[in-house]
Image 1 (cartoon, rainbow, N blue to C red):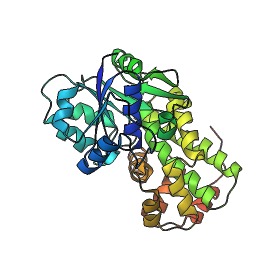
Image 2: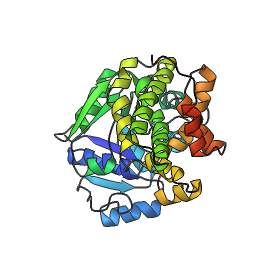
Image 3: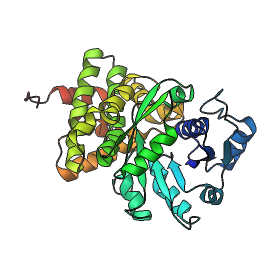
Image 4: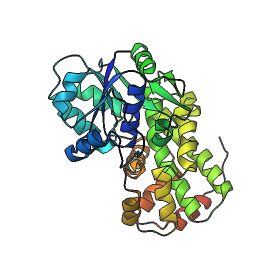
Length: 332
């Protein structure tokens, strides 16, 4: 393809996306903020910390220098945690001098004010900057292992979405485009909150009935918030809504689900975070979701109880009992 792409964020998902782009023939540069870690990646030609055994293609290069990133390509794919998203873009902008195209695989809200990440991009660059989000049911290890996966590329600019889809699409990695950027963003952020809730229920020893109910009612909450913020209801029935929610709530590759499991089993929050050893986006998303629901008057009982467990010290069992004690109501 002879195209260039720079991927920012050397965790499991950023590394995987860099490997994918390189396998598809792109000249690819992977950036990480920790210079010692990036030196090891360059030496080992793999990310032993997050993806051991997944060796880098020859056309994948490594750097910890943002100036090198800015000079390498005008197509940038951001895969840093949501709390680092804004700061990474601000630092990157210092080295950019011309046209830029921004895509991101980060799922979450801007912790400063609960804004959506496309709003952060527009504030730092401009509303006309080509921008897109990658989301959907995708565990990094399975994509790196070349197992079949389908994701959504959401953008209000169809040409850019199609361009990015062409770069990432392969026989084992199917890309679908979507114009509903808001809906895809909300689905990707709030599903992590629901995954913590599902993990808590399983950790308490409740069964498949409870998990199915949480997923179904959790989807209903995501739809209510997403539509209120401007998303389209049909988006939440697709890969970036229902698909990602099912994946994250039901498989223990999900950090958010494992975190919830630990809480339900009575483990200390700090211990659980240390044991998982990677970013758990649902923790901050729970607070931001709670604040958004309060601001816009959206009823989100599962998100509310999850917030209370994480930020007000409510016992996990009490949170479930609070949900069960709610008055009967019509389903829709």
